[in-house]
Structure formats: C-alpha cells, structure tokens
Image 1 (cartoon, rainbow, N blue to C red):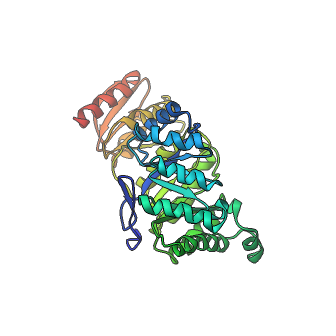
Image 2 (image 1 turned 180 degrees about the vertical axis):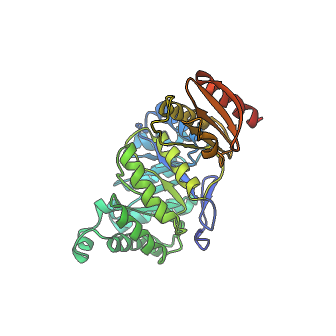
Image 3 (image 1 turned 45 degrees about the horizontal axis):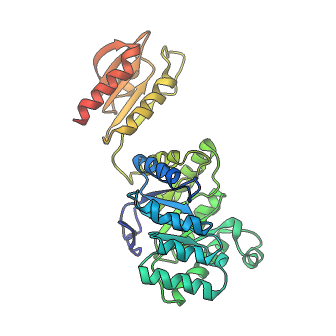
Length: 351
C-alpha cells in the first residue's frame, strides 16, 4: 500500500511521491570540503544501492565543494543546512538538487524568504526537517513534553510559512529516537498533508540497536503506505544503512531484486562453520543483481527440506555439504568447496 495521492516531487533525476517507489537515502560522514573522500564514499554508497545522498554544508568551503562533488557522482545530492541561510543559498548556487532546512533554525522570515526565492528560481525542492530534539519550547510546554502532536504541529507550521511565501515544492521529515512516538507522528502527519514524507528513526544507534529500532519503526510506518524516501540511521559505515534499507523494503514487499539470504539459527546437529559461511554468502551475493532466494543450512539431514522455498541453497554435513535447488539435492561437495560451488552456480545463473 502507498499514499498515491501524494504530491510528486523531482529531486535531480529522481522522482518521489504519487505512488512512485520508495527511494533509499543515506548521508556522508566525511568532511564535505574533502571532495576526494566524499566522492569515494558516495561511489561506495551508489554501488550498494543508495539513490539519494545528503551532505552537510556547515560553511562556505563545503558549499563550494558541492559543485565539484556533483561532477563526479550519479545520484541526486541534498545539502543539509542547520543554521546559516547563506549556506542554503550557496549550496543551491553550486548545484545541490535539494536542500534540507529547519526554517525555525534559519532565522527571521526574511532569511527564509531569501532561501525560498533562490529555490523557486532554480526549481529546487526544500525538505522541511523537524527533530524531537529541537522542538520549540512553546510546543513542549503546550503538550507537556515532546510528543507526536508537537512534532506534527511544528512541521506543519514551518510548511505553512514556506507556502505563505508562495512555494510548495516541499518534502517533510519528522524524526525522533523514540520509535513509537515517531510512528504516531507519521500517522498523524500523513492524514494532514499530501507532501511526500522522508522517513527515518533519528539517532537510532549502533549497527545492532539501530537496525532493530529502524526495522521496527520503518516497518510499521511503511506498511501503512506512509513514506516516500527512507534512511536507516546507523552509527557506522553508511554502506550498512543501504544494506538495511534494501532489506527492510524487500521484506515489506516494496522492492524486488537483489538476493535474499536465509539461514538456519544453528543447533547441535551443525557440523560446519555455519555462522562464518552464512556471513561469507551474504557478503558475496551483494554483487549479484538477481531476484532470488539463497538458503544456507547447517544440517545435511533437514537442509534440503528447510531450503525448499529457496531457489538455491547449500547445506553442511561432516566435512562435506550439499548443493540444493528448489529442495532437491543436486550434488555433494567437500565443505571447503561449498562457497565456491555456490558462486559458480550464481555466476551461471547471472548469465
């Protein structure tokens, strides 16, 4: 289910809203003015499946670097601005495909108006971003704390400010590290606006905790048809954010393509290094553009049956293993050859 009635917004060569596929975003953690490092990271993110990239623009050096970075990447670039409206203008003048601002942090209405003027002239969308950590004092007092209602009111107030300035090329994001507050806020917001929504759980945490919180929160939100772009925020290599986002979308049936790896949880019958093998397989399949399911099983007795829903799989025994296709044993190979055998099969499948 998707919110097909949402407004369609173009971000560079990408289009969101109006029932278009949910796109995956990430954010660089390099210094933006270090063009070489930033481009290298964006290339890795592109290869992993990132479709929109955001870079921080805290100063003029970073704003000028946007022009150089844009020449070397293929995906749209969003400039993230926190306080100085001049940085938003400079980023747009240097080719940013979208800007992310919190109008409440930019300053006076006149400063916001200058940003909107340049965005209108260049046809650049503005992402209005509100986080629970920066909710206005009056709204905290009104709702007796940071609440979903307060987040929504804050976001819509800022949207109305920009609309009053004659601009509606907008995307909205409201984020909180409180998963269920974030869910409720998106449910409320989706019923009050037709702008596309960028969805994420902010400050989600490390690879483990961040993935769990993001999977729960994004899963609930997206399953209601809410959300047009997503970011899984993790404290780690941003490439991990892309892997997680792709898996979340695929699990919800919102995206096809890419190999899905399933593996058993191990038990006393396991006689191979199943954990190591499953991790090797998961890494290896990242390079294949195949819409199939691969099973990695630890038991040669039950493996074929458990893997019958997979297109192809391997199962371990004592020093040996089985290659399985659609639940049928194809051949037996030495344990050390399992990974290479699977790779050969995938290479042939790919051709």
